[in-house]
Image (cartoon, rainbow, N blue to C red; front, side):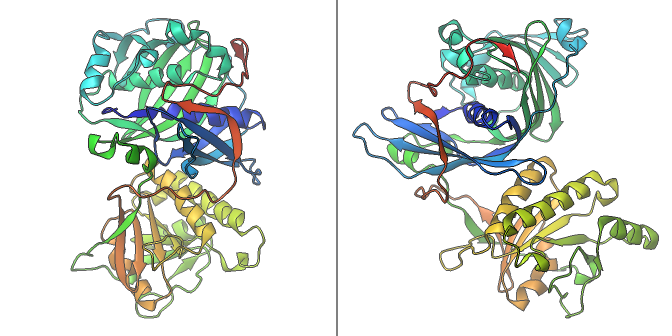
Length: 470
């Protein structure tokens, strides 16, 4: 892309699925790509995948780190590339939907595929021959259907993968067949990725919109038998300025995060418009009067249905006081927030009222303000992922210990920023100004087999010798 060779996100997803398979949790519950893996002209990228212990629901945390080794044998620090969770795969359906067994699909209109990759090159995508897999396409309403194949030169490698990254990447290209925009976007947040068969060399694909910058992808083999499903894939824009083909960019593509001041509107709302869901903790409003608190979501929605006055925003404190002495605090905090957020998003009565997840000291706003709440930092990663799928429903706020910051909270929420840090009464929002040096990995991931090079070499261990159902 723009002269820079990037490992496709599909390669990270496929590697995570393979690692999960070894532990019986080969379905990607969610995976957020933190930064692209840039390949140098010489050298190799080593890959490490860490899978944690399962939580009470059976989900396992997963992270992907990479580092580059130069031709002289020098090694860089491990850099986080992706983070998410894995779960046990569900039982695949045996039905073959008509959309895939009657081909082309009934009522679909042919979309010209000739010159498709030349068109994409004009938008900044420069795909090599291995990744040019779209052969035919159709549209029906907002859905796009496509036939994609694995090119002959790598078809013999299909059995080495659950699904070959080049084939999966080609399936995603179909989303661009009817796109009228001129943005260059890349996969960012994956949810509900399940693989039902391995070793495929050709696919029938249906791409359907699932929200702003979000799609759902269904894939079958040429007979209509299920191969893979992506329940939700969010994309984000990437620009030519973002990718510097120099060696420094390849080394330091992990961007630093700056916090820039934001100015609340002149007529800031009153704290009386806020309510608390769960434990009140130590959160007074601007006058020192405790905010109304509700123990459960049902209590809150029933109260406001009866009064007819829903709150302007509802606060959820990530760390419950009774969890302070719990040795499993990170899991306790995440379980608490995850369950509450899921219930909130599933309840139509909360639509129009943002849920504000409040942490304290979970993000670092600068050298003099380091993060010290690790469970809270994990909450930020979790809620950020949910924000990509439910824009406008969730807000993240990180506070310090100053009373001025509590008093500034209502005005800060009025800025409309989805993520905020309030320090000594002043509000800040995140921004990405440029690259920063890679940092050492906070954990010691388990190595995945092999690595990537600028010639596209994938992990060498063979996990599947022939196409087979899972």
